[in-house]
Image 1 (cartoon, rainbow, N blue to C red):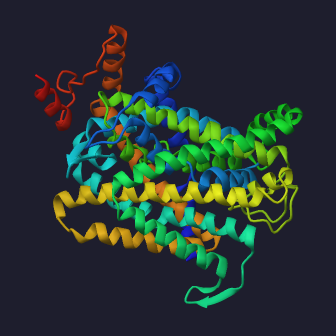
Image 2 (image 1 turned 120 degrees about the horizontal axis):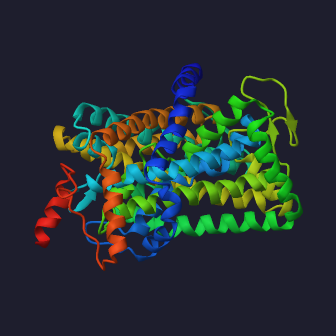
Image 3 (image 1 turned 135 degrees about the vertical axis):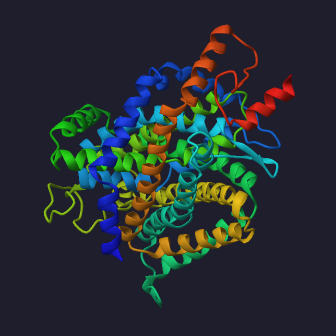
Length: 496
């Protein structure tokens, strides 16, 4: 099984996908005239001013839901793996893919808003919807929807829950073992798996509103607490910070682990963490109540900054400043750098736990375990939300009511397995899920651009209204030459 997963990862995450992610970010950055910089102030304004409705969640709630998908194990264990396998220079490439990816996030999230639909009294949308309506290829939309259900319902939750299990074992030990059909499992992981599954079931059976309400409280609080701890550690070693920044930049272009390893692991873990171009963020974007589609696109672009430039950077600086890491390129059998014990697992939260514990002795490991639990658990909730959106999309045609119930059972089973699984297997499954979605979504939004440029037209329309100083923004897709935006056409007709 591990050999099959490794083969899939090597083929899906070939250099072609690395260059596709970076190239798409550059392409849309230029076309939007670097909207991620020009509209930074507007992003803040929109983030704080949005309101929810009976049918849609607020911009802030949508941001929280999408951040709950972005801020997860990738921010703690993923950064550690990038450094461990790619060296400190991998952090630079994570920054690059985040900066460029913010424009990609704007495009995909604005597309999701333009082509969203109202179903059962709530807003739904995402890549499957805009691939069908804007690209005009229902078969391609179906492939994406099915792939996303498999990725978000089965493959990606495994990584998140695995991080929780690993962090708890680092704190409490294995607590003995129990023999199961999966082999001898640590009791700590088994108890954790049972608790997570019960809590997950309670929330996902409560619907999208319960997910939004839970994440809008938990995600900002834990992200802020995490960044505060990181800033404290950095502040206590502020004299070392210039040297660490210099190390990151110098190692980015003359990497100790090899250029391919630095850029490969930086981009792979960057995309895994911030999800720009992957196609997950647009699902939450479509659920938001906004006056104009471009507004939620800007908010979602900002979420990429929060994820990578704030949270991932906090992790990287803690690990590098405290020298709580080893470096060994994939396939090698010897360490390039060894600062901690040789048996510390790269694909896990151990580097980060060691870093915090080196400053706050006895507190670091449990704090990271708690932070990781909330980050990972809310990410699993976001995955369910995304998978359910795609189930709803398929149900428009096939009408299988039990499909949604089956999804709940699937994701709960995946979470249980992930908690007790080995890290290498879990991360391999996650990389397969991320890679498949990224290939399908990025190719889709590029084709849509060349067909009709809906997100670019929306941005120009929004900036025109900005200059005019309108009190309330409006969006008329027909006037802009955008077809099949049925929701917005109906809204315009109701306002006339």
